[in-house]
Image 1 (cartoon, rainbow, N blue to C red):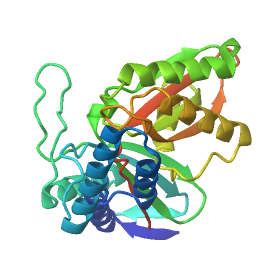
Image 2 (image 1 turned 135 degrees about the vertical axis):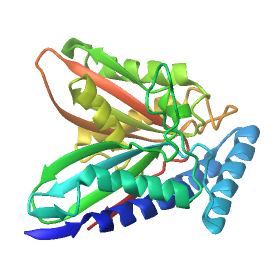
Image 3 (image 1 turned 45 degrees about the vertical axis):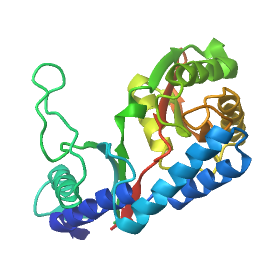
Image 4 (image 1 turned 30 degrees about the vertical axis):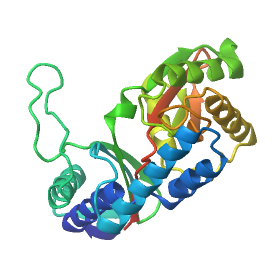
Length: 280
């Protein structure tokens, strides 16, 4: 049995929140540069130039890539041979989010109650925390700050098996076309297929953590990723003001589902596809 102190978890999460807000992942930066090389619209080229420059300034000056530093989503894999000492895991993570957002001067955007009072919690907590128990003695933490310009355009479609691959494509494209330029494209699109309504949404969120240069290990899903990316880039949505670089990638995650179901969830992320990872 290996022991990890909650104080260490808090410190790591605090640093991850700042890193994710300041530093665009290398794979996303490379995709933006590649998109700039192939973009056919002069206006789209100008927009991509500004997006790339913004990411470079954020990295060099340790400043947020975007003013919306998101609601913090945290994926945790807890090794079954890990003992967490000094407090609860969730409290440690939330303390880290509060510390990171305060020290990093990141915008605090979370309200405690969603409908009536909507009072800001002043430290961006509580985070959305997904925990999975896995073999081993490690603790893997991935932080995904999720801005709501793109989150508000995400969606879930409950299909039936007879809808098949074409039905999945139609569902994804319906959500993308409805979103249009509102999610600050070029987008990174996470698609979750299978499970239940909520599990499909979980898959779609987790898909955004995979490097966008890495295709699904299942060849048919990898092919579907490429097909959807081509369809999205043919919409003309482009980099915010029209063009051919509407999305940088489509990542699909999937899981078992009921014989009568085919849930499909789409989480849209803006060009600032932010995340950070630690293995303790």
